[in-house]
Image (cartoon, rainbow, N blue to C red; front, side, top):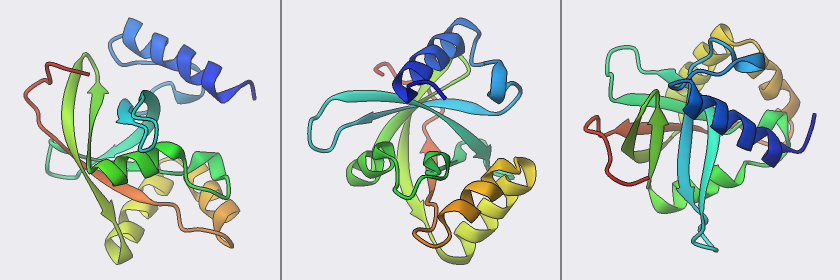
Amino acid sequence: MSDPLDWNAKTIAEFRANEGRVGGTFEGAPLVLVHHRGRKSGQEYVTPVMYLPHDTEPDIIYIFATKGGAPTNPAWYHNLTAAGVGSVERGTGTYNATIRDVTGPERDRIYAEQARRYPGFAEYARQTAAVRTIPVLELGLQLAPSLTN
């Protein structure tokens, strides 16, 4: 795979040019752009991430800190959990979000559903089983669009 930052930049541009839709590997998959600030640098970052919508609550989505099956959690996970807030671009809107780290049986149920829908997530879990449990974050979206990114 090419440089992840280059891939992210291309995916972000495609997402914004096509009202939240992208092609390639993620064609048809639910994707959001997560805005987060570096917990040390204070710099703003934007990261494309697949999500799982809540079964009944339209203002709740789940994201998964897979880092493609790497042995460590992604920086965006640490940034979001440290801040407790972030924002998300979904479709053409940007929404403020609260962050909750989902654990235990609730986390396992949500992750299993994502792996059922997208089998690559089961592979990520297999790759990381000996070193970490892939975190699941619940994002509570404020559905009135945000005025800032």
